[in-house]
Length: 329
Ligand code: SIN
Image (cartoon, rainbow, N blue to C red; front, side, top):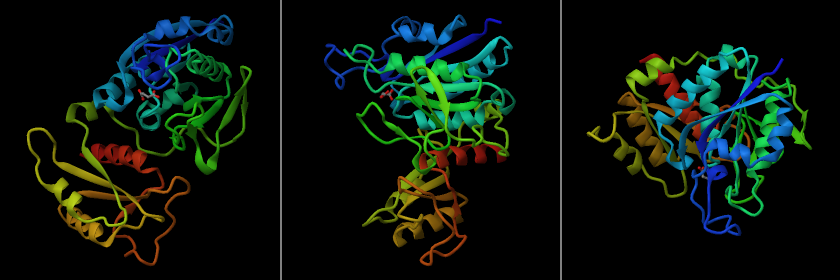
């Protein structure tokens, strides 16, 4: 039976153009439509193997400028397409800069019933579409191979021949084509000459987490959760500044995620300010600013249990806290 693969375009470098084909850095992201990207990727037709492609532009942005409305729109279109029996899965073209945040959000916000059997494959590029040697066309073909391989479900990221889970993936390099890493977990799989080789038996979709009611979240607005980093010479000033307001431009602060030193420890002056924030009803979550590993237990220099701890990266812990606060509102 002929299936459909849906391509949703979000923008990014994969859709970027530069004044000259030799320029891989001085380009403008989000210029080329997703339909055009498919036409410029000869490997996609081969990877589709007779299955049908359907392209839709959800937005056209540099992902550093991503707004909650863009996530709302993407979740809505994914939910629409994944419900259709003839759709095998969805490929999302996206900028690399906030890709890991969108991947994590989708893994929590797309109804889990739809992710149990179908893949949502995010892909991207580090070089613009106008490059002499673009990486986007190969990544797109690999994303189709992963979508149709029948062994992947849930939200994954495909880049430079690797399949990453939405929970583990992080952008680790500002320039290299192989810019993503899954830390100690490693990639879930590889794409080699169009063939998918899975490496991990780990479940791809997150299980056991409360379902996100996107309709409710959109109606009440995304809760404001900020991110701070503890560092040598840190003070409480930034945290205290966050507590002032709200004013017309920003909503009241509901949470702070701290990227702590080492095992999630926090400079004592910043920690004091965070305790004040917590006393005012602001939710505090502690993470580690280390690239690898996760916060383990409590270290002797901490008062155990004073702040909640997350094993996610600080960026993903921020999204998780927003979803948790929204669910409790
Ligand atoms: C973006 O994130 O939209 C621009 C950078 C990139 O895709 O590599």
